Image (cartoon, rainbow, N blue to C red):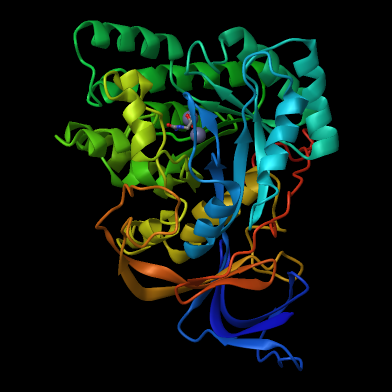
Length: 468
Ligand code: URP
Ligand code: ZN
Ligand code: ZN
C-alpha cells in the first residue's frame, strides 16, 4: 500500500515547506516537489492541509489497575481514540505493585498492549528497591528498549518511591543511560492532609485539591531536581501543574541542569473551580492528580510552554467511568484518580495555543510530537515528516471546527473534561505506519496493528538528555 499526499504544507519543528509526501511500506519514502504517484498509489489531495508528524502522547495509562479498579480505556480503544485526534504513538507506564518483580510486570503490560492499534512504548516505574530491581533495570534497558524509569513521589502506602528509592534508582538510571522521571507531589504531606480533612468532615471532591496544594508539588519537584543535580542525572517531570514546580524547573535549567517538564492539556485549560461543582459526579469526574489549579498556575504553564522551559504536552489519559468514581462517594481519597484526553489534546492545543498566537505551527509540532521523540530517543523515526521516518502523519485542517462532547468522542469513558469546548483545527486524515486509520470522521483502527517500539539508551558521554 502506498500513498501520495499531494499539495500540502509539511510542518516539522524546524521547517515548514509546501511539498508532496510519498509513503510506502510504512515509511516516508520521499518529500519534495511534484512527486509522481506510482501506479496503484492512493492520492490524498492535501491542498490547505498541514502535513505534520503524528502526535506522541508520552503519558497514558491504558487499562491501568489503580485504586481498586481498572481504567476503562484499553490499549485498543485508547490508541484508536488517539488516531481520531491525530495522535499516533503513546508511551504508557508499567507500574509494578510493591515487591512485584519488574520483569514480570513488564511482561504483563506487554501482553495487555498487544491489542493496541497504534505504536507504543513503556516507561517502567520503580516502586520499591532491592538487588533484583537494580538488575532488572539493566535488562529492561539493554534487552527491552526501555530508556526511562518513573518514580511516583505520591501515593503513600501504594506505589510511592521514598527518598532512598529515588537515590538508588536515579543513580542506576545514570549508569544505564536512562532518563528518570517523576510524579512530583510530596506523598507524606498529601497523606497527612487527607487524614486531617476527612477527620474535619470534608469527604467530597472539594477535599481533593485541598489535600494537594501547590506547595506539595513544588516541594517534591525541588527535591527531585536537587537529587538529580547531586547525582548528575537528567530529570523529566511529568504533569507539571503549578507555578511552583515550573519555577523549580526554570531555575535548574538556568543553572545548566538538564531538567525537562511535561504539561497536560487539562492543566492548560481547566481550573480548580471544577471541584466545587454541586453535582458530585461532575466534580468527581475531574479528580486526578495533581489536581486542576487556580487560574494563575494555568497562565504560568502556558508561559512555560512558550519559553521552552516545558517541552512536552501529554494527557495522563487514565479513564474511570461514573460507577468507578462512585467508589469514593463517602470519601474523596477513594475516588480513582484520572481523567481522559488523548483524543482532544492536539485540537485543544492548536485552538488555544496556535489559535491564540501563543505557539507557532512549528512550535505546536515540537510540543505535541518532536520534543517527546527527542527526549525519549524515538527521533527521527518518530516526531518528523522526512524520508526514512515512520509514516505516522496527521493531515491537519486548521479551518475545521467541532464542539467536543462525550456524545461524539471515541474514548471509552463516560465523561469529557473539555465538554462543550469548540475547537478549530482538527485532523482530516491520520496515517499510522503508512495506512489511513482516520479519515474525515471515520475511524479505521485495526486491533493489534500497533508495534512495541524499542527506545535505545542514551550515550551519556555524547547525547544524554539535552536534545529538546
Ligand atoms: O490522577 C492520575 N494522574 N492518575 C494516574 C496516575 C498518575 O498519577 O499519573
Ligand atoms: Zn502522576
Ligand atoms: Zn500518570
